[in-house]
Amino acid sequence: MRHLMNPLDFSVEELDKLFDLANRMEADPARYAHACEGKKLATCFYEPSTRTRLSFEAAMLNLGGQVLGFSDAASSSASKGESVSDTIRVISCYADICAMRHPKEGAPMVAAERSGIPVINAGDGGHQHPTQTLTDLLTIRSLKGRLGGFTIGLCGDLKFGRTVHSLINALIRYSDIRFIFISPPELKVPDYITDMLTEKGIAYEEVIRLEDCMPDLDLLYMTRVQRERFFNEEDYVRLKDFYILDKAKLSAARADMLILHPLPRVNEISVEVDDDPRAVYFKQAKYGVYVRMALILTLLGIEE
Ligand code: NCD
Image 1: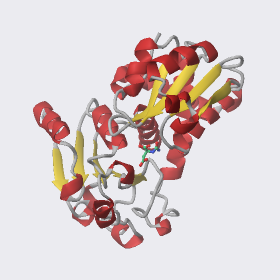
Image 2: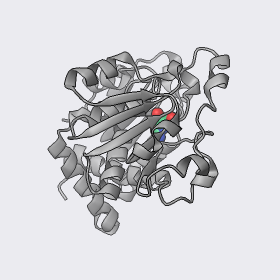
Image 3: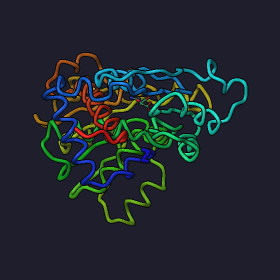
């Protein structure tokens, strides 16, 4: 039995297969409409989410399966003091596969150790968010035709943003990637990440102003300031509007640069950018469903 805790749980070759499958699903969804008939997906969300939970549910429904679950810790037995290990043992009796989001780093891993069914980490605290990373990689691969040989700017809350940590982790396996980290000093990417990049000899730069690197970028990954992980509201208020990508800033970008965002967006991308052909964040949300469909099928071991 296989789980997904970290994007690195799949080899580059396995990811290629997964993305090929996701692209086939995009091209011919009807062919997969009954692939998971009789199977159930449990979504156990101990932390708020719209996109991730609903995209998992949409993915399972598109495959002809069914879904059950809870969307907030207060409405689960966690509020009575039940451990995730016990919860997953029980869920294993009800469902065939589980997607779990938890505010504590490592909680889905603890669950996986006790689980009778595959567990997918749907985001654990500020740590990892592997299915968002699979979404990001599939989006880049589908729209750029490759997963290497580019300069990517990651902008915003690089300290608390788990999508950023997961994506960096996954991208370093591809060749010729250069990172530009764009953040205020307070929200810099954690040292363990820059240390790891230095150790592996992967090129990166840290800048404060988006304008300073815009013309260099093939990809721009925007993120929101992660309010829920701040210790005080004052810091959040001071930093929340540090970056606002608008048409004026975008005028310095390449014509084929892609703008990605895991969403939800707050103020960091002005709505006037949404109609720019480089803005692909809503397409990205669509790829999120295809990649989750491919993942569910793969972890359930269902042959095409
Ligand atoms: C992200 C997350 O939950 O970390 N959202 C998502 O899953 N698309 C990004 C965020 O909340 O900022």
